[in-house]
Amino acid sequence: MKKATSAKGAAAKRAASAGETGSAKKAASAKKAAPAKKAASAKKAAPPKKAASAKKAASKASVAEKASKGAAVRKAPAAKKVAVAPKKATARIKGTAPAKAVVHPPGDESPTALVRRARRINRELADVFPYAHPELDFENPFQLLVATVLSAQTTDLRVNQTTPALFAKYPTPEDLAAANPEEVEEILRPCGFFRAKTKSVIGLSKALVEDFGGEVPGRLEDLVKLPGVGRKTAFVVLGNAFGHPGITVDTHFQRLVRRWRWTDETDPDKIEAAVGALFPKSDWTDLSHHVIWHGRRICHARKPACGACPIAHLCPAYGEGETDPEKAKKLLKYEKGGFPGQRLKPPQAYLDAGGKPAPPLGAG
Image (cartoon, rainbow, N blue to C red; front, side):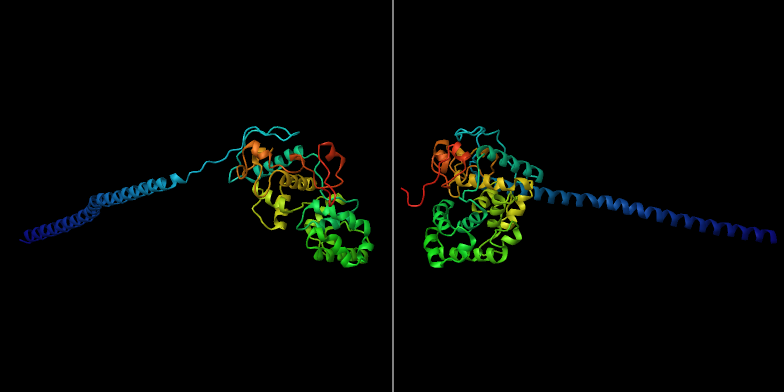
């Protein structure tokens, strides 16, 4: 009897154990099934999202395509004919080499490419103007200093026609320092702004006598302290009277270096620094002469003679002026157009190249 009871108890225990094991397996199975169901549910939900995303992308693409078509339609009439520099100079200036192959400087020109193009322009201008020189008549540093101060707001020609009488009466700084201002004003009247210029030349003469023993100093820091003398005037004197390299940033120089995209600066001191960085210092003085001569003779402010320009193939601004070779030739000035130059007493090399001296004041 006891054995039967114990047997039943054992059976009951085994059944309970089996029940617990079964419920555990079911729970484990349920846990495994839950992620699978979620994954299946997520997979089923995914296609609608992708479809919505695809529809949005298609809609955006359609809008972009329509916008680009509309922009193309609007921009089409604005197309302009771009002037291209000739491969060869059709209207060569006498005594110059033919233009080289066409070069189109890109808007994003690299610094190295800019240096190469700038130096090439200078070399080719040196071939065109091998006799380039300061176009103010002078015999010593004092005369050049005074003439340069007088050249503000007028032409070198007018200064050259005026200074012979001035230097004949006041040949030294001591003489001009002691001059009667009214008498000097009368001589300088043709130069314009004669009262202000009289004050400057008498003032700088007194400073030379009092501070430098009557001698023109050969240092930039000393020259710019003189009345009426700025960096431009100082570099003209240093480069041409003392042989010290300097860049003369006058109105022609400023105009051309911006046309050639050497710099976008407008301040003369910043232009000087930007252009100076493109060339070795030894080139600065001659570079100034080449650029200024080209600006006076060919690359004019209002109407450049593009069709007669020997460096048209290197110029980003080609086409701003007259491109017809025959019409452009008529725009050339000074010796290139057969007219007298700026100086009454030019260097012999200039005369040998066909240049003509300027007439004296009052000559027909």
